[in-house]
Structures are given as structure tokens and as C-alpha cells.
Amino acid sequence: MILAFYGAGAMGREFKYVADETGQWTEMVFIDDHAAADSLLGCHVLGFHSFRKHYSPENTRFVITIGEPKFRREAFSRMTEAGYQGARLVHPSACISPDAELGDGAVIGPGAFIGSLAKIGKNFYAAKGAAVGHDAVVGNHTRVGAGAFIGGHTIIGENAFIGAGAMLKDRIRVGDYSVVALGSVVFSDVEANTTVMGNPARIANEGAQGLLYAPSRKLADTATPAGNQAPEAAAPPETLNSMRIAELYWTAFSGCFQGIDFNPVSFRFHDPGWDSVAQMNLISCLEETFRISFKGRESMRISSYLTGLELVRKKLENAKAEK
Image 1 (tube, rainbow, N blue to C red):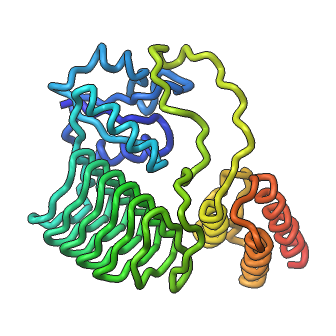
Image 2 (image 1 turned 135 degrees about the vertical axis):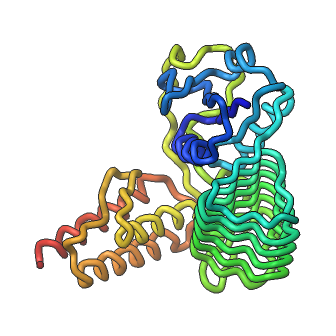
């Protein structure tokens, strides 16, 4: 059986690793109408129409390797309407209860856990170490970040996003298109189209149905083969909602302890040589810029965000110079 990854980006590379570990696929291929190259990790990269010409639904399964929940749903529909069936991709180190249900296109990452009688929808993704408790119900196209925990009997709607390290109490409901920010602890229901963050989690944005990540491209219905596309027009400045800004700050925060390269500004936050004083200076500065960013604002442009990171960079330079 052949496995197709819809999307030739970072998530596609991660899912390719999971698929390699299963050892069950005779061939793998990437689908991407906007790819810059015609191969990735030893696999062909094809535009959607070219893919359909070479791979039939009878011997091909697929998973969606796009992070944005809205685009995940659109890509999944595009594939199923063309007659293809979603795969169930489970890393060998994951633990899936025998009586749990996984929908088509579900991907379960390394060390993840799905509890007894849990019902998981289509096009679901549980990242490394995520846990879904017994009797929980998770809707279609929902993502659960690394290390997140969903309590038993909890119901998660469709197109929801549960950030890394978030913890959700048992027997609560999270509505469609809702976002639980990284590290949040949720004790009560979350309405549809709502972003919550913090411990305890509080509403950060109500009634917003915008994208989790600012789009850099669309799922264009084009017959242009991969590798031969016309250059895309320059993207407009990224508009970030409050939840996305919080994600970026907290990614930076965790990066100083975990050695993460913080790609948005190509700046390495982590330096093993820094002592606890320098790390605390970083934390203090992040908190300061975080408060400035959110004061009386629901959204901002990335230029404001980069200004905040410039303050962080200068503070770090000063801390290092004082050592």
C-alpha cells in the first residue's frame, strides 16, 4: 500500500518519520502544489493533479500534513472527494486501547496514549506524548499538541486546537474551532470559536473564527506540476491574533530551557553557558514584553512582535556581558 502526505513542510517530514517506523508502506509520496523541489526525504513531490494521474485510490492512502486546522479540513475534503481514503498512522511506541476508535486519517505520534472507549474523529493528530483519556470524544480535524492531556469523558469539537502541555479536566466540553493555548489548565467548558489560555484558563478571544497561523498560501486547484511553479507574490505582513502571539512568546520561553531554535527571527535563545541569572532575565523580559503587547489590544502586526523580540535580544546581550 502507498502512503501520500498532503503537504511537503515540517509536519510532512515528521509524519514521514512516523511512517518509516511502522514499516508498513511500500512507497511514500508528498502532495504539494507549491513545493520548491520535486523530491523530499527520498520521496517524489507532486502537485495534486499529477498525483491523481499516477496514484489510484485503490492502492493509496493519505494523511494530511498541514498544521492549520482550517486548511487540514479543506485538504482532507479534497482528497476524499477524489476518492482517496485516509490512513491510520500510529507510531509503534504509541499506546492505543483495543476498544478505542480512530477515524480515517488519524495520526498518533510517538509515546501518545488513547484511552479505553475513546472515540477519535477523522484527520486527528496527537503529537508526541499526548494523552486522550477514557471515554473521551474528539471531533474531526482536531490537533492535540505534544504532552497535552485530555481527561476522561471530555468532549472536544471539530477543528479545535489543544496546545502543547495543556491539561483539560475530565467531563468538560471544548467547542468547535476553539483554541486552548500552550500550557493552559482548563477546568470548565470552552465555548465554540473561543481561545483560552493560562492556569486556570481564561478567555483571551471570543467569537473569532480566524486562522490559527497566518496563511502563507492557499490550497490552489492548479495543474502546475511541483517544481515548475511561477513565483508567488510577496505575502502581506502577517496579522497575529492574541493567541498566536502568546504561542510565539511561550515557544521562546520554553526554548531557553530546551535548546529550541526560535525560527521567526532566526535567533537561538538557548545557550548552555548561561547561568540561572541570565535565564531569569530572559523570563522577566518576556513577561514585560508580553504585558506590553496585550495591553488594550486584540491583534497586532508582526512588526510589533519583532520589536518585542528585539528587546529580548538586547536584554540577553546585556546579561551575557555582565557574566
